[in-house]
Image (cartoon, rainbow, N blue to C red; front, side, top):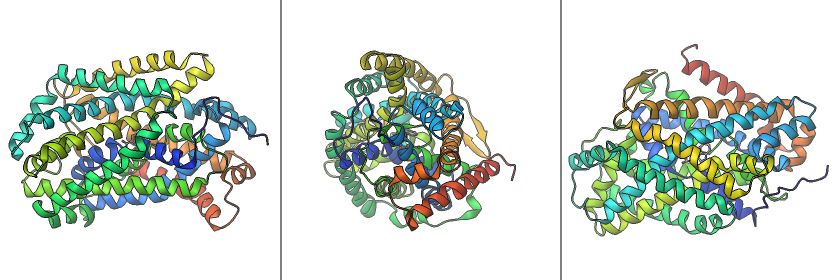
Length: 457
Ligand code: TRP
């Protein structure tokens, strides 16, 4: 077959792809979301299910997405259509791309608001306002911050502008260099924080919470949420990694690359958990504090440690960068579609996409004050109304369903010969293992978790 070439260019090297994909994977999901949902769903058992989902479902789907992207070399909508045609199947498979574009808009709309919180905390920390705060003060500072929609709106707007700037320039330029330095920096700062938690936090209690599974605490929706989070944290199920795969050089190994990305992503999440929970327990805080968890705990640490202002501001700066490099991947498929199919300039497409996402973000901005309402999702209490609805809809349903369709397409609809050719890892054990997982284990696992989560099993 003649190789297709992406009209948007290519990554300069395999390392560049790894950096960009890791940049997409590592973000608020690891540092903000993983700790707070782990807290809500009771710790160890939830973490174990999440890890199992990363290995048995996340990794296979990641390889499938990269493989499809590289073979199609277009935005996910066109890629799925082209590959379906090539395999003699209906072009309806491009629905995977459409639902992914929708999910990307919805996720970025709230992601940007939370990233805005992180920007605000750069300034709060740098101003010294957090020096010596106790748990109660940190909590009430956060509470009064998020209940002011105007502040949230301002920071959300700023983050959307930052995101649009990178997208308009094209994800390959600029991003590469930023990620190469900032990711290791974030990692190093997490280690500094870990030092604090070991010496000042209830470290053993924190570790036990995180790693000692108590299966009686697994609520009905825990499986579904753990699986959803595996998709969210690895940026899977909506075409983001497929899009990035379309810029990947033909000779890069998809299997090894996926292992590295998933490994780094998991490491960062576990580190974040090991930092947060010892602080939670040492200060008598509630693990199930919800989306505010890191903003209520980390300021206590920064307020006490030597050079806390410096480390604290730097930490939130790096968190903003991590969120930034994730955010752009959420709407890159939409932008690429507008450029490829509507003949728009990249700048115009970016402005359009950013405006739509910004407007959708107003829903989340209001969810922490005027529009807040509580509800129970399969046994877990949620407090932040439409924000929680958006999050559950995208993470627990849209992404896993997208992943299911991707796994089915790659191993049932596509010809095995085409798959082998594109993965280029031979027909050995590694390939057969992946094929088996993706063809049977992933789809069955997904269906099981869905039925279980909906209380049907
Ligand atoms: N993985 C990112 C995080 O953990 C968020 C993200 C970026 C994402 N792109 C995505 C989630 C695509 C789902 C799909 O912060």
